[in-house]
Length: 320
Image (cartoon, rainbow, N blue to C red; front, side):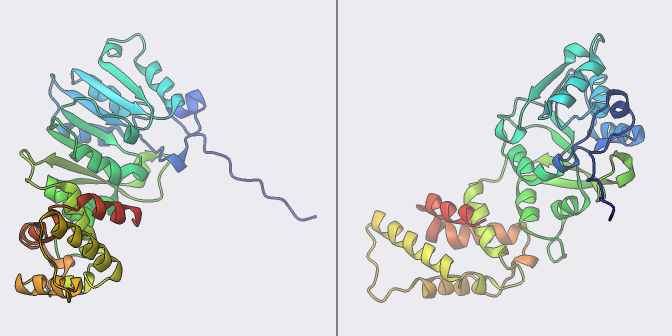
């Protein structure tokens, strides 16, 4: 008879995991940072202060948490897995650190963030992008964030115009913050090891932020980066984009009692504006922050965005 292979069992790991029988859920991004040298380096780069309140997302078994508790006023740890919440509580139970730890159980993306001075975390990689923008749009401002990401994601955050990894994520993050790649972290520094290499990034929000409505900005950047190697002229020739802009331009004219000529064609209007402003032949892959700001303010804010942000984003985000 042919041998029947047993299905793979969840990995039972060493250290705290071996002592308590924890089965880490790698599908949920549970890769515990085990190397104390890396932990210490992250804390050093965070430049923590005694008066700081620190936000940590995905504390796991608390290797980073405990070290931070020794240096700051308070750590607010957000953890979705009740088993790991229990492990974290056990590590500080009966110690002087217990009163400095607050644990919030649940999905951090669905939770209102508390006040904090800095964010230090080995993030579950699946939530990297939404969490970064949740963080950057958080008020009041925090001082900085020191975050562990998948290497490629980290490199996209800091990518410059004209490079292969430069994308919508790059331009949106760099609009709102100063971003620096701090160090590489190999997969063997985690338990269980992930399939990818990692990097630590420092994110410092710009304060004050640029006077730009981020939703409107992201909508136009999204159009430009749908095919980042195409010219803006080609990007705006999409029939879906033209139909949307035509609909909302007519709403704009109606609200402002502006008469629309009978032979009006939105495609011609778009191309005329692009040509007259010198953006017709520009490509998103090589446009820097200043280019996009001029593109945003001088090109489409007066023309389209004064009245139809909700219509635009309803369409754009429903087709993401």
